[in-house]
Image 1 (cartoon, rainbow, N blue to C red):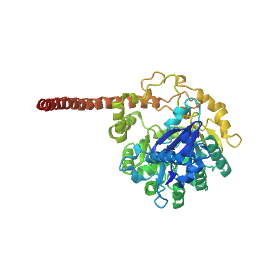
Image 2 (spheres, rainbow, N blue to C red):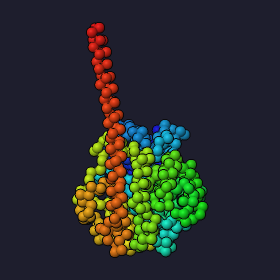
Image 3 (tube, one colour):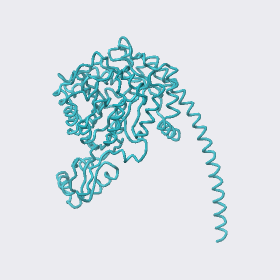
Image 4 (cartoon, rainbow, N blue to C red):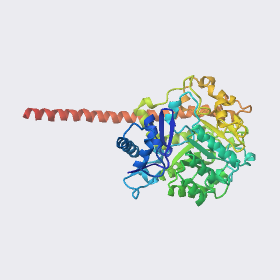
Length: 509
């Protein structure tokens, strides 16, 4: 019998706990220390069970080989059944399979493919480490250069000039490995503009680091596709603004960019490379963004929308001319509520299970994951809390180790101490559950970089979101009441019929 880790599967050993995860599919399991030792013996290439057990004997010398083999087969078979391992009776029959669009079986990919950008990919890590900061995701800007000039971009166009030094990049990845970082995000600018993009990608995968790439995909080549397929890239996140080429190209300001991006998304899908489509909504695409959602779902791609673009990190705000007005926000949010299949499904589940609703923000709650689980580095070595907050320097990897910055940077430790109660207008706010307040957005939009100064549009968006969701809830609950009433009626009627039928049978006996 032969076993191997799936190529898109990652394992981390934390003390007496083991954590195995397939980030693409949001799958994870936690095992005890014994299970962790069993998983650590596995490779990404198939090995015969006897070979694996011989490695296990070094850790379990007091256990008979046959007993150890029996336990190993049972343990590995269960992991294979749960989707983490490949297994086969013979090497000739062995298929070293990872993510495949065909395995989604017609279901929307939003139910399967994880978004690894907004939140840590693992629920377990957040729970396991709780208040202890643990660097799970490290965002690296390979280059600030970009072949597009998107009207809403948070990077000032004058700053798009620098590639990361190769030695700095490789050293950063090595340090990520040493710290146990699970996911590294490659971004730009446009990361595929960096001449060493493929080399960096392979190096990260050889270090067993999960990689996500943020790209406009206009520069995709066969060589890059092969590099992405090597040990299965976690996900490629690509911006697609409209299915109308004129609208999309008006946002990128590059004629022909739509066709390149759309066609290359299809090429990735054909090669079983997971794709997440990002569709920020602004004035230009407010009437057509929903077509992107439909197109993505038709192709089993996760689609993420964002209707509050942020100011540039140099605090210039000319890009905000493209931001939606409050009336436009109302229309966009209403459309998402009425037409987003995934939203409706999740909402129904939460309606049926009220405990799944997010509790109101508490004064001592953390504000977000920056400084607790995520951090960002740009091409010159500067480290920031997140990619959009590049006026808040936490250190530089050219002269300070990643471990030192993460553990001891005064700037990052200050953010860790912040709690919701420090944002006075957020405590007790009835719209808090519907808010997307962001410290980097606050800082970028304030002339003095004040992270506590929440833009008025953020609060208005939360109010609109709250009002429209409550309206939808009332409609949905009304529908569920009618459904429950009818079910209850027929259930009672059915019970009466069953009772009558049973009594008749009893009387016959």
